[in-house]
Length: 439
Image (cartoon, rainbow, N blue to C red; front, side, top):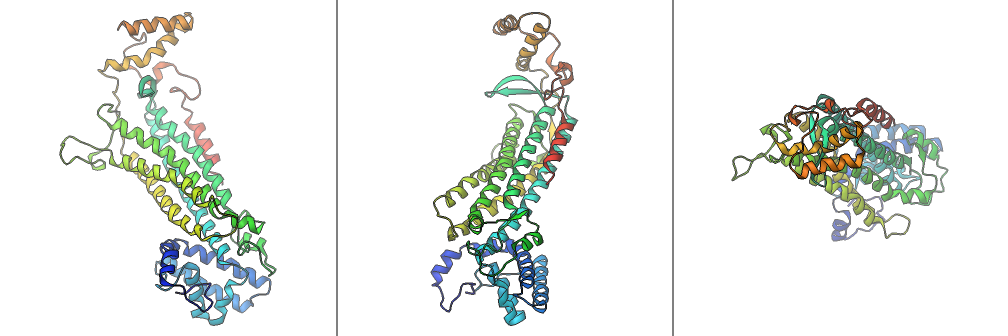
């Protein structure tokens, strides 16, 4: 097998199979970033005299040809090549001869992997950010459209107080603002340049690491070479934590949708084409999309812990354990993209029940606090008003003084403080999201 570390002897095939694992497949996702890192690295090598101008031009042209193959989907890892780094260097050597062998001067596969992964994660975080913004905008639009439709609120799974579809949709929109702040934190943790730290202890060549930092668009270098090596696992864990924040928001929303779709609630519905049926019960419309999304998000939530466990008992420096991080994080990223995209798609067809409160006296009790407050505003001390309404409920005589539940809208209840059903503050939340997106 072609490797960057070959010294004239070959590893046993069983050792190769066990240690390489699924890495070759996952490495294809890093291909374009390996080329980007190499393009910056050779420009720096030329600037310090380790490559001539002609050699730089030849290597740059060949790397851009490889980049074109990657973009067209024709780039492959050959069967006897260990990883993406070996494949790129092998292609350069075939095309350019001895010049191709010079590309690895001043770096190790360790910092090469680090820079590839960081460039990849940076782009992935930007992609997730855009997908979260699309979901945010869909939720805000639904919040505004249905802001006056009352929805029962629950605590402890019990009927509690009046809510509204505007408040419900808007709640998850605002939760996504915090998630974008988390994504930004992960982006900043990822956005530092390890290239030139080599195997974790620097290099005797006069490398210009500030130059490669500028060329690759990183915020700063990882100044300490050992700290750069410590970044392996840390960067992945930061990204997993941010993904977990988004996943938790989406998980809870999916759970709400599963519950609200149940005929026992009947608060929302979706077209038949977006639900599934039962093989035995003809009446069933199952929320399979939301159930699968809930399960996927639970798996994403576990990724941070899995990464932490994989990295928790190693001294500093590179260890082959890190290779398995890709097997954990890369599928989670892809699942996150799919869940966010599917959530936006499903919400494009959601239908809310505008007459939830009609004909069901059970929902009258969600106005008990409204009645207590109305009596307080009329001059009754709160504890007295609370006791009066409680006694009426126990006697089965409670009724809301402002009218029938079936005829009420959110705007009828007089809620006026920030964050209430009468003051959703969607415009202010949109401003916060715009601020959160500014990175």
